[in-house]
Image (cartoon, rainbow, N blue to C red):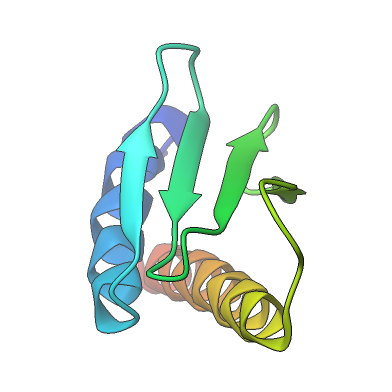
Length: 94
């Protein structure tokens, strides 16, 4: 049986690849299961989880929230959903 701790590195790798499509950067924080996502518009989002794959995404207000911020947030959320679904599909095949 595959555990969440084995899935997390796969999720992180796939998620990084998806974020690169939007020119976003993913930085792992020192605290376990905490990441910082920076967009080209300098927006910052924090992503974390207690029980993987229940992932939380929070916008960090560093300026004025614009339409571009909303587009990036939607894209990041879509990437999270895609990556989790992809891993769950992979598990279903095993």
